[in-house]
Image (cartoon, rainbow, N blue to C red; front, side, top):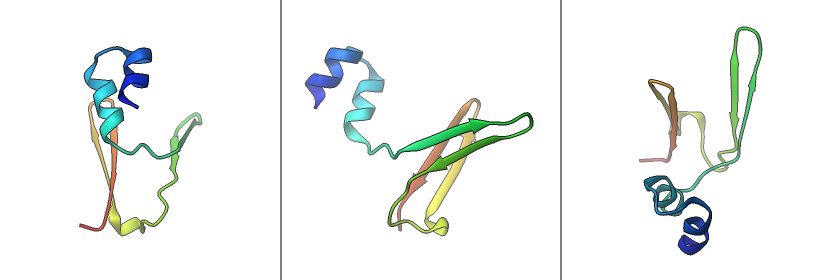
Length: 65
C-alpha cells in the first residue's frame, strides 16, 4: 500500500497520513448559503463523532473512547 501511494503522491506527509488512517466515504455539496457534508461512519453513533474546524480544514473523528 505504501509503495502504491508513494508512486502516485511521492514521499509526502500526506501520503504517510493516508497509509496510517482510515478515510471514510464523504459526499460534499454546496448551496448558495450552505456547505453540506455527509460521511459514511458505520458503527458510530452521533455522540461518538467529533467535528472540528481549524482555518479551512474540517476534521471528523469518530470512536467510542
